[in-house]
Image (cartoon, rainbow over all chains, first blue to last red; front, side):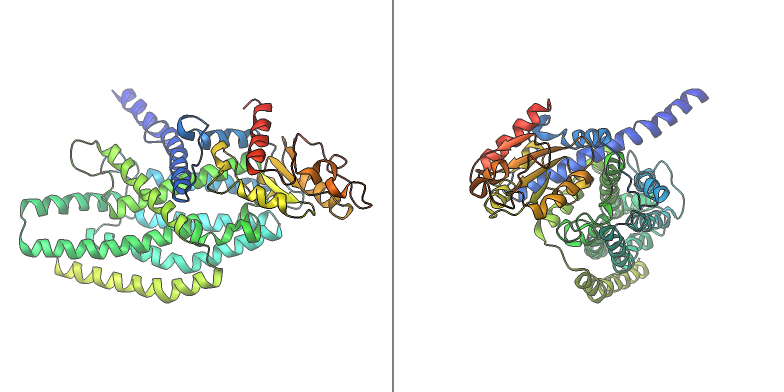
Length: 338
Length: 125
């Protein structure tokens, strides 16, 4: 008995919903992102590798793994080699705290939301180390820009993520997802006018939070309106400039998993995670919702042009931070009413 | 892919950029224009290589990780074109091992895509 349980546990870690599933799902998400982005620009996108180019991200990954791995002479080789591994490991760790196959995540404890936010901050620090360690002018500038960017989006991101936590009275992601399911079924049992009005008010305030969180996730993922740290047209590749071969492959895969992790966070904080009406199983609901979030992100990516770093920080501090404070005020009011 | 202009009239450069746009879209074959030579596999050279730019071209080539390929785009890059025999023109062939030549002045985007696909076929893709 114990050994079968152990095998199931190990299988969960390694295959589903663990490493193997996450890596392939991340590659799939990159394909969705690229294809959708290309269609929005009236292009076709990857086409000839597999069915409609679905294998393109995997082909890119294998190609990069086979390529020469250059470490510049001037670079700090230890930092230079460690950062890709860290940037690959952190989003994977985050994904284990996100509920995928049921309302409970694989690792879940009171306060894991704070751990996740901390891990996201840690990625920024490692990106800065990557830029600094490669000792390239462009890399250093890119790393500095990343940390500057973090100063402006970190606060609205934390505040937006804490909103559902206040309403759910739980600082764990699984608790928040469970609360979302619970409040829905409570409402269906006893639909009064007051609870309907409160529900609509809650939903609209949380929609605002979703908007704020999405903007911050765009900045976290370094996607187009905020891709200032890796701006290819001005500072070449930003902090990634010196990376090649296996390390670049790890960085790209890590970036894809980060895309999935960000959309998984958006899903579980605001869209009810893997919960949904019965005929579709929870894991499929989770996939549908995260793909929707990926599409939102690539839509915004196609819609905007890059901001300058000072414009972005200005805009974030003058508009997004007050907006998020207003949002948290409304949430508090709602919590008192409940 | 990385694009390096070695001092031509920009005709080939414009046609190359057109190959990335909605009408032609070279991403269908999985090719993207990258900013850093470290991220690139294919070096696209346009323009007649002048003495001034030759060292820089070689330096960019050396920054790319193995395996790497060079594509010469346009008459100037292939033979010097109208600048053939000019005192300051050396040509790509004297600087780098070229894997594919795309003739034309300037070559159409279709021709550039065809050349890149032929290079991919040569690699067994």
